[in-house]
Amino acid sequence: MASSVFITFNGQSCESQQGESMLDALVRAGVALSAPCGGRGICGKCRLTLLKGKVRLLKNGAEVKHAEVKTGDSFCACRATALSDVIVSLPDDAADFSASSLADMQTGKEHLHAGKTGRAGIGIDIGTTTVQAQIVDLDTGEVLQTFSALNSQRSFGADVMSRIGAAREGKTRELFTAINSQIEEILRQCISNWNLSCIEQCAVSGNTTMLHLFAGVDPSAIGEAPYTPVFLEERHFEGRELSLSARHITLLPGISAFVGADIVSGLALIDIMNRNEDSLFADIGTNGEIAVWKNSEKRLLCSSTAAGPCFEGAEITCGMGAEAGAINRISFKKETQSTDWFQSGTLCNTTLFYTTLDNVKARGICGAGLIDAISVMKKLDVIDETGALADKYAPDGFPITEGIFITQRDVRQFQLAKAAIFSGIKILCKTAGLEPENVDTAYIAGGLGFFINLENAENIGLISGGLAKKAAVCGNTSLKGAVKCLTDSSFLSRCREIISHSGAVDLALNGDFSETFMENICFF
Image (spheres, one colour):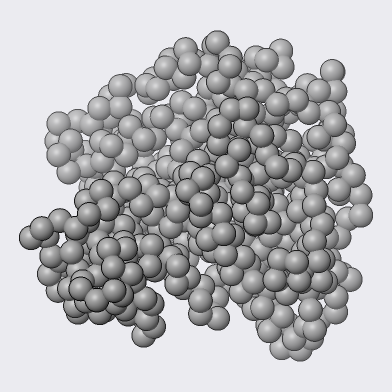
């Protein structure tokens, strides 16, 4: 084999060194492939299809004899090395941020028009799974356009700890480059679309690890006791310091290693301290970040529980992010006429219906759809209280529609995630001297907050009984807060005040957490 070969994809090529995994080569070239397991070869999501050339599978970094991939076969990029120049096709959710195109990231085009706006700013939420941004007219406060895409760092793993692990292996610069390139493309697209001379202000929110990586700071210390971030305070940059096309950049402040600016941004947005009520705030995503406001004591308690990435579609067999084609609702009936409902077929003598994002053919299932699916399976006795699938569905999984199904492993992943969220809420409320059902309002934020069916979430034990009736679904409050920061001069002051009244609770040190977690693994 030559010292290096070339991998061609989408009419472009990148170099791959001898023995290097194809995932590493593609990531270095600016291609974002989903690899929820962080390239350990266990999730099967970073699949390529070989169109031409020779590829051999790897095991523990070494080539496997007699394991060449045949033309037309798919294979995991993290488990393969190119033996010659090759041509491959990428999976549908791959993104190439070396190319100057974000057509698939744009939404909200109904506001897009020719001409030039005045002063513009952009709010950005860097989620572990998804990056979202909104460009704002700073003179009028009008949101002009919204961008959304999977985080290009997903090639390094689906969750925060995978990214920290990659940084510990010396990949901080690669992680920085991945997110920096993605944000710069958003900025350039905004400047082009709106005929701007520049982006004046950029406010960035996200969890503590994501903001470290955005700033090019090694987050390794966050991943081990005593879990010490390099910074938590707000930070200000000139755009040129980060090689970004914005004059001024503000990183919003956080509370702790695992309660970041995304939570502070959301709490400031709803102005939780000035509501005369006991409140619960839960941002349900890869991390379950929770805050409880005890109004009588003017005290805010915050914590984070490791839900894992299943609510973002990762590590679920047919899972995907909240993108076009993701099943986001499942029901026994067509609930409204405002959305196209598809019939999935008759199962257990019951007809099921589902909707997809953008009303297109189903490609997978996102977190909100997974909650509905598990609830439906429980109601149909497809799973018992332990989560075990009925014998009929155990071998191949429970089918939702053609090519999309829920396996036994998926149910187990979901059980771990929902028990973590439920237990985190219960223990944090108890620490504050409250019962979950006694809070006045429960604010549900995060990607799930757009589509979650709260009754189904309660049915399968994601949230405790009674909370569904008190819940206010808020959507992406991290992004909304970042946008608010651009137009409200008092927003950062509210963030600082929230931090000054907050205390972080380490659930791992709470003696009741493990017991509560085990009690709530099952479905009742």
